[in-house]
Each structure stands twice: as C-alpha cells, then as structure tokens.
Image (cartoon, rainbow, N blue to C red):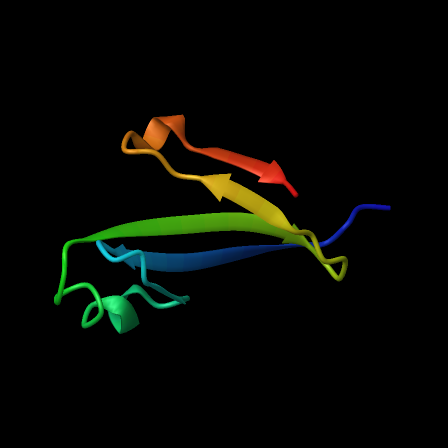
Length: 71
C-alpha cells in the first residue's frame, strides 16, 4: 500500500533584524520584503498524509549547501 503524498510550497521572507513571515503565496510577502534587506526562501516539501512530520532546515548563503533534517 502506497502512502498518498501532498506537495506543499511555502515562501519565507527574513529581514535583517531576524523577523520573518511565511505564506503559500509569494505575492503576499512582497510588502514585507520592501522595507529592509531581506532573504526570500522557497520551500517545497512532499508530505505524507495524514501523519505529521517535523523538519529542521539550515539555509546558507549558497543555496546548494542547504540542509534539511527530520527533527
């Protein structure tokens, strides 16, 4: 029996003060990213239904060096 998966996309904007906002729609974060220097991160995760999973990610200055682990 295969587990049904759902693809989830979340956008996260982090400003130079360390404050952040997240939304499924990138356009909703545009106003938040205009005030200060920011980093915008797109996160795409395939999540099994209905079991919850907690993940922890580290994003570096070089996107190809990012790391995602099960917490």
